[in-house]
Length: 158
Length: 158
DNA sequence: TATTGTTATACTCTATAACTATA
DNA sequence: TATAGTTATAGAGTATAACAATA
Image (cartoon, rainbow over all chains, first blue to last red; front, side, top):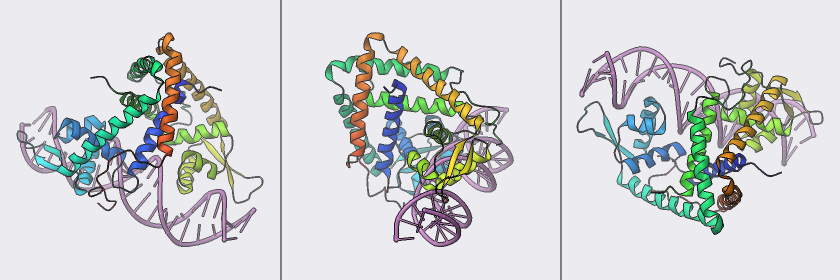
């Protein structure tokens, strides 16, 4: 029985997460922490509000996350030059270097995955992936929910 | 600047998670809980050891998970007929019905995603996805780690 | 008034370690 | 001894709510 496209995509998701978890095992890094560092690497020094919206998380959670990243030496809180309420979260030099390395690893992995696809299929493959990504984006943005949940047992309080 | 295959796949992963999170918001379900129910739906009544290995989680975590699923009315713990140490975690009728519905939703979503891919590209697309999945599986199973982590700042204690 | 970030508190998911009952 | 599951404890990540400082 052939797996559906959705099953294949879910398989890829699981493997990508597993790869990260394994890489971070035994370190003080995690998916969430690296996500924050990744945003800072690309956006440069940012306020906690910006981080909150990029990571789709509440400001309170960002406070805790930045606390731990700061304690571990990945980031520093600097005064915002124009707004004395705000803070600019900034990568330390060591963390900036590390993120540059991670970005190179990321590109290497991307190249390896593309190379695994038979050359003749590559164009159709990326085109298809693009189509799936847009379709999924529309579905998620749309207001319909795609799973049948039994409301009689799935009440918040139970 | 064209996104890489890896970026597209990460985008798909994020959207799939977002879709589930949204569907489960305001209910007592979560990705982890539904994963357990999904395993039980397909494997039938299972010991907690089996669940632990399917979810790749410690037995202790399964105890807590089954406790909460039981309290909410999704599963029951039954005596194992042959091994008095063990327990068979079993879906309640209501939960079994819900999972049947979810499986139908899952198929519907799979079909929708495939339909989004131009017909002429479908064969090459699934072939490519298959290739990426195997390649990624090999990479993850291999012992090499794919990210440059700065050991001087990423020590467990920091 | 509205926004930025913090303190206080709580829930879920996960882990390790020590223990009981049974195989 | 080894295995199935539980109790106890801890840490990360997330949320809501109330508050202080600043815009």
